[in-house]
Image 1 (cartoon, rainbow, N blue to C red):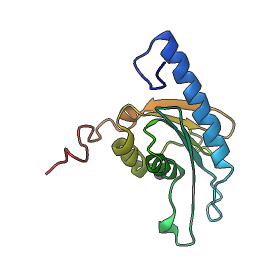
Image 2 (spheres, protein in one colour):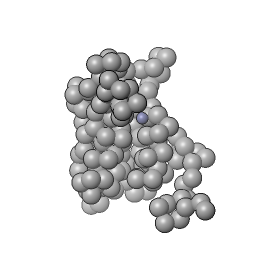
Image 3 (cartoon, rainbow, N blue to C red):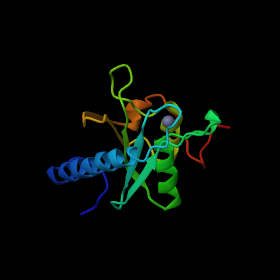
Image 4 (cartoon, helix red, strand yellow):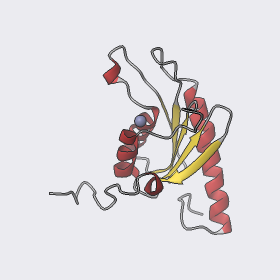
Length: 153
Ligand SMILES: [Zn+2]
């Protein structure tokens, strides 16, 4: 059986749920490694690849604040470095304004190019509350048709 998130059948829905649970657990683990001495806002992310691979990313801050990088981009870049095609991206973070924290615009744009609009994105808080959406849902007007070989001129 393929590990990819194909159209729903009872088997694929069960597989999707397992992959999403794995992504949430991995992102929660990655959060414990957050390097965030300036904000104290610990964040971790994980990618589950189409082959079932698990890739972690953590927030990495720097005294030169502009050099910080979000946990989601660390996970996505590590996935690409390892030739992993992302199918799920989970982010574990404290809530912001009492709402689940979703990836920032920069991370969504990077995810769109590296993983495509059907990527499943999961936001989870440290208590395990979570929600999920596709990247297409999160970036409804994103340039879905653009790829590195099909760019606007
Ligand atoms: Zn971000």
